Length: 195
Image (cartoon, rainbow, N blue to C red; front, side, top):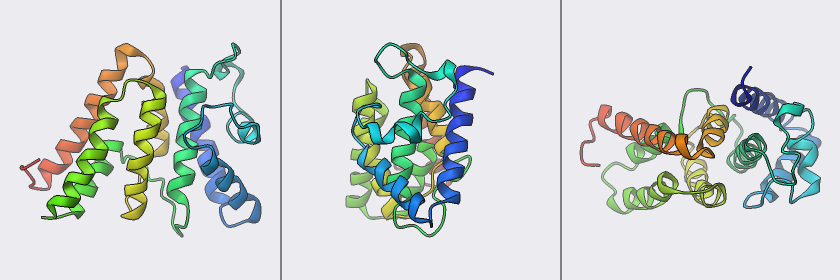
């Protein structure tokens, strides 16, 4: 199994556990801790180590004092998931909804509200053009807040895979292009050619 596949499998396992336990005191505490980790670098908050490192395969560890690509992908996916899941009675993780698909759904829901559409595009544009994980993390938070406010779901396992690839300069543009393609394909198929 590739490092990316292992990263996605681990993220899927953690998301399942978080969803299964979200209505327990321990589950709510875990989600709250993850939300406090938003905007931080993996490893910066020792209280999160068990959540995103516990059970992580040895091959995914950085071991050099810097987060590995897998650690970044898992950490960012889980913290953003915790933000998105907050206050929602239903699971916000839904398979096969990429970041681009979710952003297109936001546009579709804003029918003819130019100000809202502009706000969505102002948040999505910097995600597509981010150049490193910290910048991407900052801009993704804004998108997730919009998804949360509009009850739009996202595939957090796919996001972890995309975040893993994003860290390689050769594949970063491919990930960003795929997000853009998913966004415009959905928007176009919904009959919205004005984007």
